[in-house]
Image 1 (cartoon, rainbow, N blue to C red):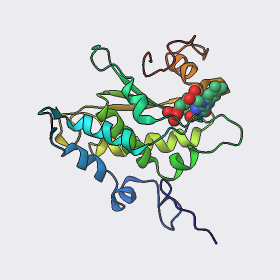
Image 2: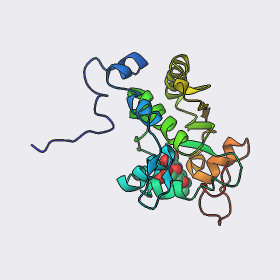
Image 3: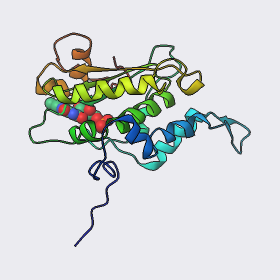
Image 4: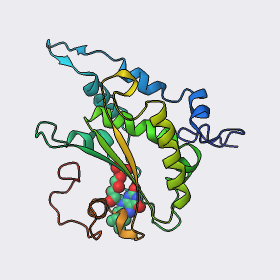
Length: 215
Ligand SMILES: Cc1cc2nc3c(=O)[nH]c(=O)nc-3n(C[C@H](O)[C@H](O)[C@H](O)COP(=O)(O)O)c2cc1C
């Protein structure tokens, strides 16, 4: 029998695995966050230095990590479109609208291992100079929103979120926003409109990427 290699849901279906933070911590949860916060600037052969954030962005680019939104777009490439010099705030949004009939790629993670999603978002935010992030969850996923809000509360209590996370000097707020109950809210630009309190009308393109012009 071929064996399934589980990566994201490695622990989720193991007997006794629960979505609470203590269980996640017992399974090395939030260790990657500690690891990246401990990184030092790296010396490059040309004499320049690579910041810890640049190192993580570079690692994500090289890893070939791709989005799960349908297009399988390169995550590292998407991050490279962000203008970090404009002085404008940069936001991170997790698209958990999941309205495609019969599609359940987000719900198992949210229900079974919410801290994995949260840790991933904190890492992504830190690597991209984000101070405010949202999880836009399908309106009908009331239970998922409840699980996430509880997990976020736990993460705040342990200072994985909020002011000076783990005494790093890095601040981050992360909130759950429940969607407006329409399939189109999952389209990335419609989602942003909805998050801004408007009707989820997709934006005219170009610009093609919300990483260029977003929330
Ligand atoms: C009508 C429509 C609905 C969509 N709904 C979702 C959705 O529910 N969840 C999702 O992740 N992407 C959805 N997408 C794709 C998003 O626009 C976008 O490509 C995706 O959020 C990028 O995610 P990634 O960074 O994981 O690749 C939808 C696209 C369209 C056109």
